[in-house]
Image 1 (cartoon, rainbow, N blue to C red):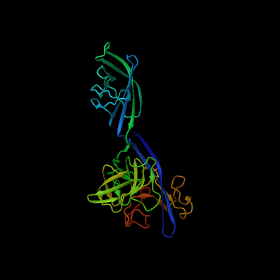
Image 2 (cartoon, one colour):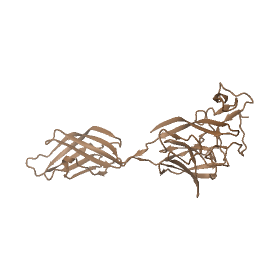
Image 3 (cartoon, one colour):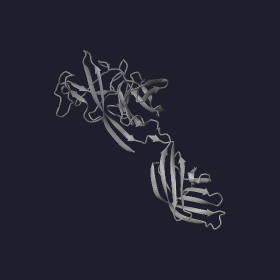
Image 4 (tube, rainbow, N blue to C red):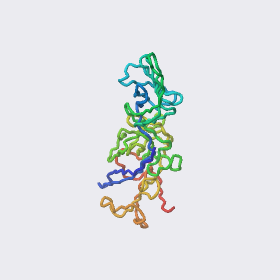
Length: 362
């Protein structure tokens, strides 16, 4: 298991009154703990026993299929190679953890092959050679036969076979947060506002390289991933903006019920676990420059008319400080719902909220 974090740009544009347009690029921090995402229909262990000192010389191969990692006491069905076709054969893993195979040579005797006790092999492809083993040849009716037990080695080759199936999507507990502030659930500003952008963290959501939207209107599905928000019989579909294996950035519909809701992700036709969240009329969060929820905010100094050059609205910083009385542009989400659809270009206007912005506590 590993941690992977990346900054992903999200480009959007929309029209303003008067025929001008505005474009923005939001850098969103994406990443989480990466868990294995594939399961396999079958794991095949092939055992190649070699005993050059045994007479007659014996080199035998057995394949034991299993749907999971085999533990002590698990019985498997060993399959003969073509050279031994027709001879009864059995295989098991005994209580001591040893792999054992036995074969009847047609009434003349029998072979018992045993890999070392407490042998544990991972469900990982590869070859595992030089494993200590023993073989006992028990004589049958053949004249002059001598029962003998000799030491040797076994090489185990593990192959993952069958159809690889994607694991279902999984939402991390407390993994639904404001996409700008990443405020944890239960914090004073930890609810998700109607009409806001929020993030879902988890596993097995979408492609490793990520997929993002670039234009309106938005769809309720992105790369086969959709998000459902419901409360009782009321259910609404959210609008994904970005999706990768471990994170979804999505717009909470403005008409979602207030209060406690449940969130469910569908990816590739598979449904995730259901995680609770709280929806509020507003719960603002300011986007940060590094997309982490802390540090300098995405605040631009208004220098000249927008739409000319990027330098007319530089990001506020130490070398580009704001002057007293200068207009600032602040990028945030969670100010509240809108009256129209959430999947089209955001309308221009003021929200009916009592908004107060403090700078330096005043």
